[in-house]
Image (cartoon, rainbow, N blue to C red; front, side):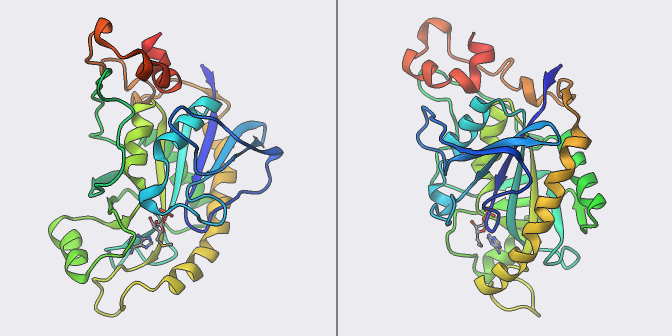
Length: 291
Ligand SMILES: CSC[C@H]1O[C@H](OP(=O)(O)O)[C@H](O)[C@@H]1O
Ligand SMILES: Nc1ncnc2[nH]cnc12
C-alpha cells in the first residue's frame, strides 16, 4: 500500500481550486524544464493533493507550447499517484451536449509538434497505451460526477488536434463520421502518454463546451460561447474533485490495471549503452525501474 496523492491538471477555465487545507503555491523544479506554473499543494479531506493549471494562471501557454513533460515529471516528483486531467472539448455527438462531462477512455492522437516521450536515444522504452486511461480512476470520476448531479458520459474517444485553430467543417465531419471520435480537444496528448510512461494512473474528465463545426444547427465554434459554458462548468469540475478523496481512499492498493507498473518490461536499451545524462533526467519518472 502507498499513500494516495491526487494531481489535478486544470484546463481552460480551471486555473485554481478552492478548499485545500495548508494550501501553498510551490515552484517545482524539473529536469524537463519549467512546468506550466507553480503547483498548488495542500490537503483535501486529509488527502494530499496537487493542482497545476495546464495553461498557467492567466492562460499563457498555447496547447502546442504546454510543457507536458515538465508538468508530468513535476507531479510525479511531488508524490502524485493519480492524475485527473480536466479539459474543455468540442462534441461530435448530438447526445453529448454542451455542459455535459465525458470521462474519456480512448484517444486518437493527431498532434505533431510536441515532445511525446521522456525516453529516446540513450534510453529507449516502449509502453503500451492500448488502454490509455486508468479504469479504476475513471470509474471514481464517473461516480463523483454522478454524486454531484453532473450529466456524465462513461467513456468516449477524444481526438487530440494540434490547434490552436479549431477544425474545418470537413475535418470535423471526418473525425466524427469516418473516425468515430466522440469529442475533440488540443491537450490530452501527449499528456496521457507521458503519464503512462511515468507510471501514473490517468483519467480525463472532458467538459463539453460546443459542437465543433459539424452540426447543421450550430455554427462555427465561437470562443465566447465556450467561455460562457466554461464559467458554468468550472464549479462543477471543482465539485467533482472534492468528492475524489472519499472515493479513492488514502491507502492505495497497486493499480489492478498495471498503470503504476507500466515500465516493468518497457526498457530496451542495454544497461551499458544507457546515457547517464538522460538517466539522471529520468530519476523521478523511471527511478523505480532504473534503481
Ligand atoms: C478555450 S477553447 C480551446 C482550448 O480549450 C481546451 O483546453 P484544455 O484542454 O486545456 O481545457 C482545448 O484543448 C484548447 O486548448
Ligand atoms: N471544438 C473544439 N476543438 C478543439 N478544442 C476545443 N476545446 C473546446 N472546444 C474545442
